[in-house]
Image 1 (tube, rainbow over the protein chains, first blue to last red):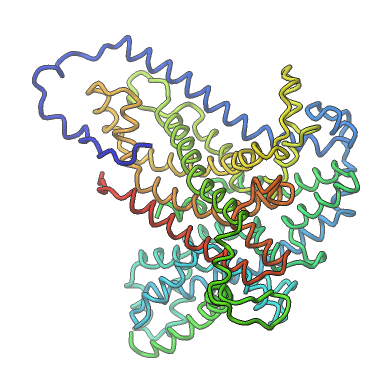
Image 2 (tube, chains in turn green, orange; image 1 turned 45 degrees about the vertical axis):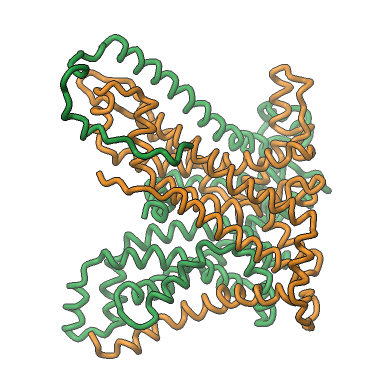
Length: 307
Length: 308
């Protein structure tokens, strides 16, 4: 990519020197042809990539309905009959139900905690002037660009010493802590955009600072909370690195860990169809939620990068 | 607004800041300290060893391999991903057929469909994506090789993840697959906000679409491209590369260390080999690489901000 190129003078400015060459009328035939060629080309390219995105997913869905023998002998053929038993086997015998439950508990707890603690910190940092405000803000923001793995080595022992290793609540606390940087960054910017007059009026009327926050500012910040909530939900639901390091008890595994473990153990048992059923089971709820809340999800996930 | 202000500030900050300090800031500081010790992680006793870990790291061939791979991830992945995404986003936004009396530049028909589909991988866990592709790459029964057989290429049956020359590329392709859609949607939003008159003016002046892209679209989108670049680079150095390499490759990091990356090496040294102090040393190197990467991209990418 040519990054050093200076930006061309914008076309808007080049309107002035209409002297000699610009008088010629645009050749309409060529223009139209170029448009059509481009159109066919773009559709071609776009369809190919759409195909490349969807095929692996469809392949997984298809495979989850096949028996083990046909998975190996003809990976691309349609299932001869729909083996729903793969799904029930994955759900019960392969502990997918436990993994789901653990994930729901961990993500539910940490999502609420992240939003409450994140908005409290962001509100104070956005609206109040006090010594150390900038320092604390940048301390939070810095967490976004640091390699988490570096902290995870000592963190394992910190968590272990507190007796929180391999517990759901320990994992929740760690998830919250590592979700705070982006949440604080995003919500601080959001609280700054909200009008100050309403909060001041409430304060003059005798509402305390915390009452003003919970009853006036939080409801006003709802759109921002939804965006950052979706961002954190997906991030925490899909989290793999934190539980891999801090959650080594087989009974406490979350979905992503459980599936990876399943892939290792099913390799010995040879129950590939059950594993694919588990994979698809984990994929579908998220994809379904995405299709339903498409606009909000896209907004939530791209919000940070557009800021 | 002075009444009880400081009590309120402390009350609201104490919990989030305390949690953050305990679980994030404090471990970071500790790990830099540990990198100068001989701590194994298995026993609480350790002593200071100065720069021993660092000089050991400089002699460690596997460290150099992991550094090389991590740098490749951080430099190549964003270029390929963002390049592809810009291309697709441009096709979606200006590749449309010209309609009578319509604007000169239009999006392709079904542009929202493409955006929805392209975004699919972004909502899936990278762990699930990695597992899925580990099976697709399986040399005997995987989707890829049987597809090759299906179209008559029986002789072309790569080992993919089993081939030391190919494994790293196979892993990187998965990361490209899973992130392109995010950037397509991001850049599309940016392109949609560029006023149509700019394109019209450029086209009237005789610019073709390629010129229009480099002279109009890209400069106006530059801020987004740059922050996307940093974001992708940090992911490629950290969590995402850990998941794909750890889940997909044999070893993990193999065959023959051909796919090992720094973040995986830190994990293995700390939690598999019981060399926690040495692991934090590599972690510090990863920190330096990450910060240097972000600084270089911000610096190289700095240019005049265009208002429109």
